[in-house]
Image (tube, rainbow, N blue to C red; front, side, top):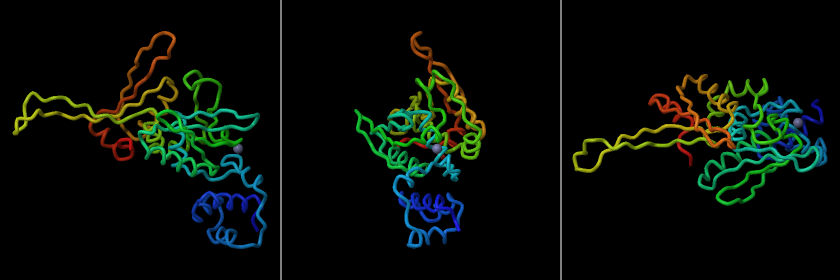
Length: 265
Ligand SMILES: [Zn+2]
């Protein structure tokens, strides 16, 4: 016999479109049990309020680790947690309308990490992907007053475990938010056979952020994958924070990054 809480969690995850296999893994039960709960009438369903109280942290669920690592990257770059009222929060991630694929990937990751309803708010040139819950500070404990560069951003041990196991997803999320893949073109002195100008092309990755803690989270991930990087500082006027730019430009390092990041889409 499983507890009411486990059954309700399984039904809630199912309702948000998770496969039976994943629901079973997240709840630590067999797929057969999940199928039975979904199809059976043996147990009456709990009230909506009880079902939506599920939290991926407080309820000790098994997080979808790669989706979490990616979403953490997005949150550290372009995310914000605000309070709606006492104890109720919203997570907001700004997605540029230039990259519809990234917007879809953000929504998918959000649904995998925490199956609460997602809504979108159109802004100028961008879409705010939002979700409301009292548990967002459990999922991202880095929530705090003021911009992220004005306070320490330190990962909790359970978050470190996840990103150490899935550094690729974290780096992908960071580059998709505050980073980019650019191609530098340099004209060759020689011309090609048909007389046209010839170019060398150097693809590279950049990540720009004012928080040295967030820069460190990225470079720690790159180090785990043995991907070479450099960092330089862009000095700003005194009233602004200096920006730190991590660049990955060595040919082999760019090729490694291309395997799991690639251009925005
Ligand atoms: Zn919680």
